[in-house]
Image (cartoon, rainbow, N blue to C red; front, side, top):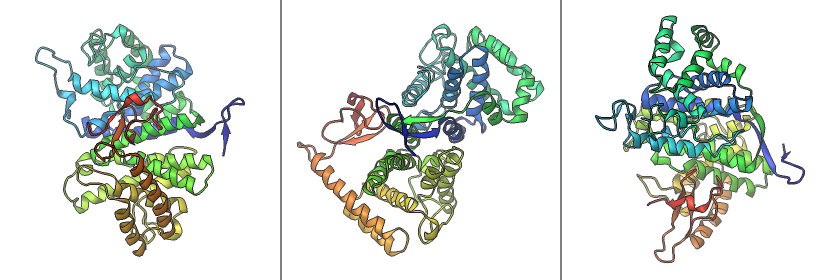
Length: 474
């Protein structure tokens, strides 16, 4: 299906339910935050529900409320990027003995800055700024950036309170007796952790009956009642931003697979164009490539980054990432085809793949193609524990898999031709005259990696200027 942006400028755009996509992602982000600091399932949606109630009490417009709910769900979108770093346990650390209650500023600043950079890729309705950046600021100025309450955007103050309350009290399980403890905490922290204005909004928006209703109906139902769906058309530029955002979250979780999702997405688009598909299908297939590993957010980094061979139980957990991709994406109306293409990327023609063990007659051409693209990308990309294979080495392995009856022979040969030509072109244009080595430039906004002597003028994924690119190995 093709949609037109305007009469003056015809641009193909894709129709998806962006609200559904954010709600679906909240499940995966909860898994990351649970791994990091032990929050209970549904944390992101509860923070969104808390925030929406307080935003409504503040008199925000319907569009502002939609954006607030989305930003609340995404408030810790950059947390995955810190699971493999040295800041583990930052919730319990202090800057110094003299700064009691002040959290590790280096950890928080990096987490908040990256999160803010990422959400700016998304097509929010009201252009909100610095909500994720300042969502850990305290009213007394002892947050990561030292910004006092009166200088912090109201939405950021709201998300900060909602996040803190849910982490401290696991609001999905509170009893009537717990309500007085929550209210006492909020009032005790007025002027220190929370501004007086947000405390007033809390009082106006919540009661024990309100919490009980959320527990009875479920946070999903409550959010759906109060926050309208955002099912609308998106331009190709907006789709690129959404794609870069989601792929970046997945790829930043593990240094072992960094840039893998966007690599699959780019190759998916290249093959889709080779087969002459229409622009709408090309965009949807590109989107599927970017999201195919979103289920890895649910997998522990202890398994994702284990340096040695996985045990049988660990490998079974790792295989679960494909079914988790399906679980996340199937919730999004209008993405049924994308969900299948993304979730079936580890299926094999002989039924030996996972998660469903589908066989040749159960796999579409698009499913088979995505599986081959994923294999090619995984074999050719460098990882901390291996060098990337050449095109010829990769094709030798894939042709052996064809002989074993695991992947499609015609698609494999098509990939050999298309990616072989790409490899020759890259080798001819991307080598440094001084060293003979290919330079890799990483976009600091979305994580896209470009190969060439100089960075591109603009990032082809997030459209940010080329000065956002840094040498990937620097």
